Every structure is written in C-alpha cells, then in structure tokens.
Image (cartoon, rainbow, N blue to C red; front, side):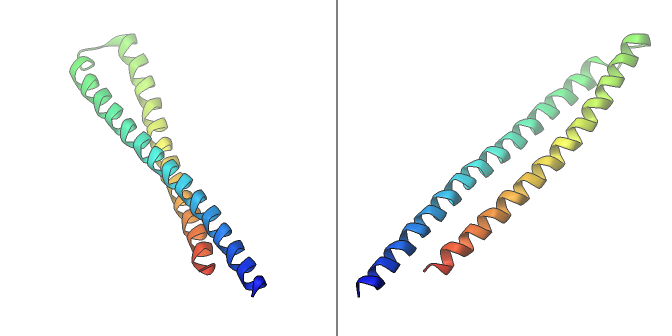
Length: 105
C-alpha cells in the first residue's frame, strides 16, 4: 500500500514538472508569436514609408537605398522562416511533454 502511494506521488510530481515546462513553453510560444506580429507591423510601416518617400529618389541615394531595401527583404524572409521553425519546434516539444503527462495518468 505504501509503495503504491509513493508511486502515485512520484507520478504526480513528474506530471506537475512536465506541466510547468509546458506552461513555460506556451509562454515562450506566445512571445514568439507576438514578436512575429510586431515584425509584420514594422514591415507594413516600412513599406508605407517606402512607397511614400522613396519613389522620387534618384542617383546614388536611390542606389544605396535599394541595396539596403534588398538586404532588409532577405532578412525579413529569414526572420519569418526562423520564427516558423522555432514555433514548430516549441509545438513539437509541448506535444512530447503532453504525451509524458498523459502516460503518467
């Protein structure tokens, strides 16, 4: 009887530990999603400013700006895919931990 109680307490402690890790990862996932949304807002602001102010630029200033704009475009794509990969890994880890919680029930 005592062994069963000890086993149940150990399982409950492990469940709580896994659930705490899940909670932390869910918070992290929320932060990553918020960061991605913030980047999207910044992108829209940049594109609006670009379309408003840059069109008449010519010569060296335009060339320099276009070079920077192209670099930003590449960084934008890298950040997007990095965020997607990060979210996929966090979701995978949450599922793994949730499976361990379910096994301990």
